[in-house]
Structures are given as structure tokens and as C-alpha cells.
View 1 (tube, rainbow, N blue to C red):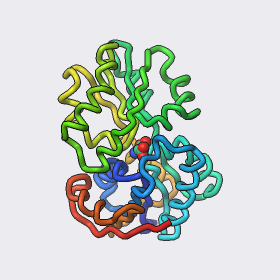
View 2 (cartoon, rainbow, N blue to C red):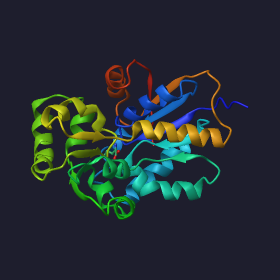
View 3 (cartoon, helix red, strand yellow):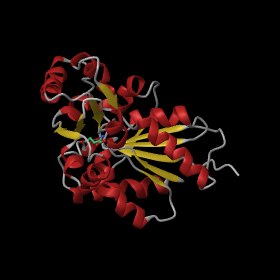
Length: 263
Ligand code: DGL
């Protein structure tokens, strides 16, 4: 039997829209609820305790709106908060994100893989476990990117400020022979055009949005919870709703109404 309840998706801000697009493309029959926690962005430099509190608050809200499943469209929130959410909501399908270390380790020819991610993701025990498991045969160079999420939140996808910040992050990776670069933060797919400009054409970019959408489909099917075609999308922001509404045409592909999430 089809389940027409929506899927709740959240991120610290607009980054999760890169994942929402993949979910919409893969699962056109699903209704989607998206919450941008832009009032508390960036998560990357915040404590795990703070992020866990945000995850609890947002998960309770989205489930209160009728969500049948939750997607943590944020590597940093997944690293800090998904284990606790699984304990709190054992019956709810929860899908998180992590940097795509396994596919990158398989793809590299130089044996050097770069990871762009937030400080929080790179410092997490979950990321250390991922490296132990999948990266024993390759050299992994991690690069935190403080300031980059703020540029993307401000809609500066192709400005000189963003370009020079990004150049500083990728240059050392290029110099060390990295030929495969993991985008370990859901904001970064929005600056792919800039990255392609700055990187040699031989460097492969790896991100996880499409894989997360595929995994979500598998999980919903296993729970007999795939949707029935009456797809709508609703948006909330804990920052300025007008700001999210303003970037939706570019980052989501169409405009939409945005409500304020005050908690
Ligand atoms: N988009 C988020 C991620 O995937 C976090 C960005 C941030 O708020 O620092 O890690």
C-alpha cells in the first residue's frame, strides 16, 4: 500500500537543497518537507552537543508535521546527531550522509584522495571509522573549509571572495597529487562550477546526494512506505524566510513559499 505522508529533510541551511533535488529526481511521487536551520548556520564549527539539540528540535517538528521518514541532508548533523535520533525514534526510517570515502578510494588512480568537509565532520568519530574501514590503501588529505558555507548561504556561488577562499583550500590538495576530491558537505555541490575552474580537468569530484536518494528509496520500499504520486514540497527556515525564498529558484529550481521555524 502506498504511503502519502511526506519525507522530512533538513540541513543547517541551504546545503540540503542539493540533496532534496536528488530526492525529487529519484522519487517524484513523494511529498517533501524541507527545513533550513539557517538561524544556526554554520554547524561546522559548533559543538556536537549544540548540533544534537538542533537535531532533536527539528526532528520533533518534522515528525509533528506528519513526516514518515527523515533525511539528515547534512554530513555534520549526521556525524553528531543521527545515533541519538535512532535511539529516540527506533520505528522511523532515518537516512544520513557521510563523505563518500569508499567510492573515492576505489576511483583514485594517484592513490591520493582529498576531502573537503566541515571541521565538525572531519573531527568526528564517525569519519575516523570511515577512514579505518575504507581508506587503508590510499592517502587521504582532509581539508576543513571554514567560511565557505557562509559564502554559499549568502548566495555567493561565483564571486571573487568565494573563488579565492576555495583556491586556498584546494591548492594544497592539487600540489600533493590528489586526483579524487570528496565533497563532504551538502553545501559544496552548489560551487561545482567554481571547483571545476580551479581544479585540473583530471580531478574527479565525488558527492553523495544521488546515493542518498537511492538509499532512501530502498529504505522506504523495505518499510512499505513509498509514496503515491500526490507530491508537494513545503519549506521552513529558522533564519529569514525571505532569504530562503529568494534563493529557491536558483538552488531548488523553482520558487516556493517559506514559513518561519521559530524554535
Ligand atoms: N551542509 C552541512 C554538511 O553537510 C553543514 C554545513 C555547516 O553548517 O557548516 O556538513
